Amino acid sequence: MSETRPVPRRESPWGRPEGDHREPKAHRCNDRAEDVIQVTENPLACFEGNPFKTVPGPFKLFWQCMRSKPGEESTEPFTYLQLDPPTREVKLE
Image (cartoon, rainbow, N blue to C red; front, side, top):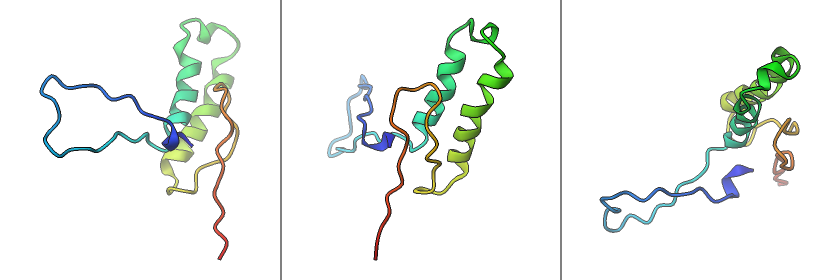
């Protein structure tokens, strides 16, 4: 999942409050959003093939991720990102 990848931190000109050692954490759906952006990032993408076929799939998975509870995200593979599909941790009791 994206939560384990480092998130770049922007340094503030005012610094950080004393004692603040929090690190930014990626949202669990960041990779799904990035998969949608990969489609629309190329200005010619709308002219390459049918955008009604290229955009809805990744957007649908992003929307499902945003509406799901943590740990219940889709395990469908990414459409454009070269990442392994998300996995779901199974806890045996």
